[in-house]
Amino acid sequence: MVSLSSIAGADSGIVRERPFQLLLLINVLPPLGTALLSPVLGSLVEPLGASTANIGLMMSAFTAPSIVVIPIAGVVSDRYGRRPVLIFGLLWFGLTGTAIAFVSTFAAALALRALQGIGFAALTPIIITSLGDLYAGTKEATAQGLRFTGSGLSQTAFPLAAGVLVGMAWQYPFLLYAVAFPVAAVVYAFFEEPLDESDDEEPTAGVRAQLADMRVLVAHRRAWTMVLARGSANVAWFGFLTYNSILVVNVLGYTPAEAGILAALVSLSYALAATQAGRVAARFDDPLYPLIATNLAMGGGLALAFLAGSLAVAAVGVAFMGVGFGLVLSIYRSVITSLPPADLRGGLVSLGEGSGRAGATMTPVLMGAAVAVATRPLGFEVAVRAVGVGTGLLGAGVGIACLLLMSASPPIRMEGEAAARPR
Figure (tube, helix red, strand yellow):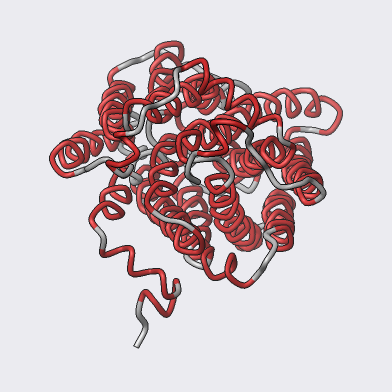
């Protein structure tokens, strides 16, 4: 008989613990900030008065604020707790997301997407940090993997619904963001701080001392290379999310509903792969080798999808990309949460997620510019394919280079007061 432990390993029992269940519930929302739009972006061009060259800004407008806000949210959660930050993030994310259904201009939609990005900044990094508070070792890797599996399942169901709803009215997919409101009510009623009370009773360092410790931590090559590697993973992922509907509809000649199927497939692929993160982490003493392999799968899969001549071949490519993405991000996050002392964990995790947001913000902009430049000499179809292949290779290449630098660096050793803090 198939059981969760046979799939995810011995540590899968954490799914019966209420703190983990609540974090999984919260985690339903943040992936929808981008995945919900992936199959419908092409359908928003005409009603919002946009163009195929600038519609990708709907992604960048969402991710850009997070670059600045995520580190702030991490420091705030380290000092004042995870719960209030999570509740604010849920309410703000849902309010600004659903409001897009009630505007009629591209500028207004971009403004609301930027505001919604602030809500995202208070969700995913704090969820990841909370898992690092609750668990350690392979159990923490399993927790990060199962959280990512939840993200994949969320991104499997909702894009399918969005692909259908956009055929009725372009506004309808944005109403799905209202799911955030009942989730916020449940979190308010039942979620407890994951940090130990004994830690809360200890005197905390001042803001300046905490920031000084963060600067020391990030100066270590092992820390900054992992932060940069975490960001590189989003290059391939957002390359797919932004150009999925354009590739499927404008290049391959299919429909938005079939673009939704492709988005659901890649999400399902990474959801299944992420369940194995704990097992993969336990099998290798050094995370370098599985991380290099998963980077290659992610970048190569995206390249295959953009070279495909049919939806079936593109599906094979995005399945490989999904497997690589599900494992690489789960293991990255597990490594990052293990590097700092507990009271700097939120800050470092937030820097890693901020790096991811930077990659997510720049990728649609640079891809749009590259397609525009390449279209004149190559034609639109060849330009889209070439830029998509280059994006996959770039994301994987940067990630692998950072991993090789990290493997050659010494372990992190904090000095003074920070060294005495629990890890």
